[in-house]
Length: 206
Image 1 (cartoon, rainbow, N blue to C red):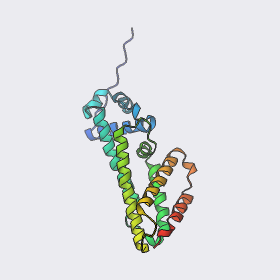
Image 2 (cartoon, rainbow, N blue to C red):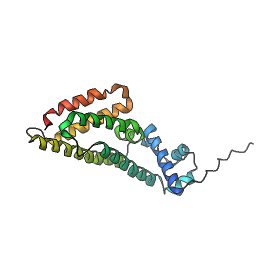
Image 3 (spheres, one colour):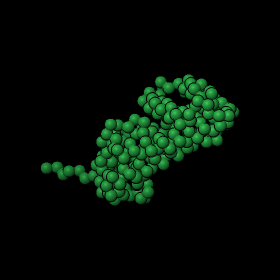
Image 4 (cartoon, rainbow, N blue to C red):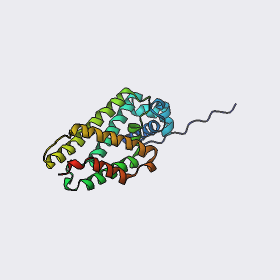
């Protein structure tokens, strides 16, 4: 009877590099197959390492998942904070909106592994993950609300516009087109999108 082939020895790697490798492997699985496909075995196969290598870094799947959530949460919020300026030039609202829409689209297209599990969450997404997404959505909405409030203040008053409602509307628009960018990017006309958002907010011009 032929002997079973032994798995090649996993080369050594600095602890932090190995940790990132395993988190990247888990993220690839989630983005491609959903959270239901995530296991220590699937992660070890994706990273081409043995199971003991994974357990040497993480105590188990839960520990790995929460480490991944922490990392991706920081990454997503940092990207959004860099794209949504709290000190826009509101004398050129059209230019600000055009730049912001393009920057946000580039952000999603440039890092789909971060944004796919957020915008295209599978039905099997764990409750803890959905709670984080909801929490982070509120952080971003409040950031948008600050920009809206600033624009209305410079304009000289709120009138009938409620910045909270406007910020919720902007979040809805952003999430819809974020999903579209990931699934059918050719269907998104950024000039038309930014022009439409600008027209919607025309009454906010100072």
